[in-house]
Amino acid sequence: MRGGLTITPNTLGFLLTQAWSAIRRNGLLTLASVSNIAVSLAILGGMFLSALNLERMARMEAEKAVITVELKEDAKDSEVEVAVWQDPRVGDVTYVTKEENLRAIFERYVPNPEAVALIGENPLPDALRVKPAAPEDIKPLAASLEKLKGVEEARYGQQVVEKIMVLARAVQVSGAVLLVLMAFGMMLIVNATIRLTVYARRREIRIMQLVGATNGFIRLPFICEGLFHGLLGGLFSAATVLLVYLEVVRYVDAHLAFIDLLYGTKLLVLFGLGMVLAGALVGATGSAFSLRRYLRLT
Image 1 (tube, rainbow, N blue to C red):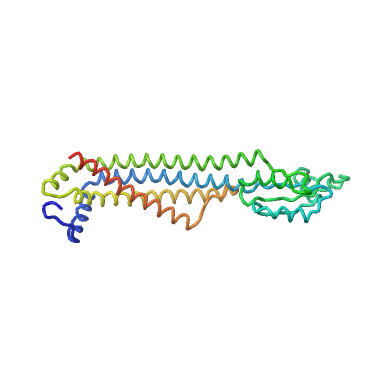
Image 2: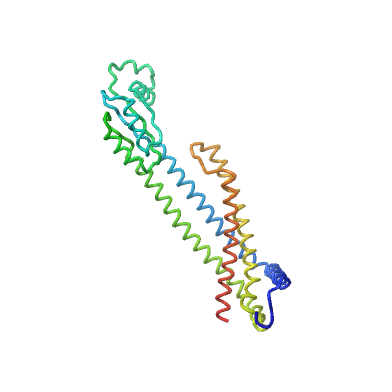
C-alpha cells in the first residue's frame, strides 16, 4: 500500500472496528440501506414463491391428464396392453372393462345407480387408461397409440391439456422475466442508497486518500458495512416472507384444501438461507461498485 501501510491482522481488525463505528454513527443511513434491501428482497422472494407455486399447480393439473385408448371389439386386450407398455413414454396403464366404463358414467351423471340396469346392450368399448410419464408427451403418445393394432381410438382432453401446458410454460417464462426485472430494480435502489452513504462520508474518504491510503484500503470498511447491511436486510426479509408464507399455507390448508402449496422444512431453510446470502451479496457488491465509481471521480 502507499505510504508504508500494509494489511496485517491488526490493520484488518482496525478496519473492521472502523466499519462498525461508522455503522453506529450513521444510524439513519444504515436504517435506510437495510430497509431498502429488506423490502426489495421481500418483494423478490414473494414473487419467487408465487411463481414456483403457480408453475407447480399448472404442472400438477397437466399430470392428471390421461389418454383413453378405446379397443376394437375383436382386439386381444392383453396383447394391446403389452404393446402399449413398449412405449417408454408410458407411465402407467389401467385396463377398464365396458361395464366399468358404463358404471362410471352413470355414477357421474345419473343420480340413481339403479338406472344402469335399464340399459340393454352396452354401447361402450373396453379401454385402457394410459398416463404419460411426462405431461408434454401426451399429444405424440396419443398419436402413436392410435396406430397400434386393435386400437379404435386414442383420445384425451386435447384443448384443456394443451391450454394447461401453455399456462405452465407461460408462468415459467413470465416468472423468470419478472424475477430478473425485480432483481435489476432492487440493485438500482440499493446502489442508489449506498451511493448516498458514500457521498455523505466523502470528506472521510478524502482525508484517508490524503494520508496515503490506497483505494483498496478505503474500500474495505465500506464493503464490510455493505455486507452487514445486506445480511441484516436479508434476515429481515427472509423472516417476513417466511412468516407470511406460513400463514398463507395454514389458511389455504384450512379453507382451500384443493390447493396444494409447496411446503417443507428443506424448502423453507434453503429459501431463508438464499435470501440472507442474496442480501449479503447485494450489500457487498453494491458498496464495492458505488465506492469504485466515487473513487474514480476523485
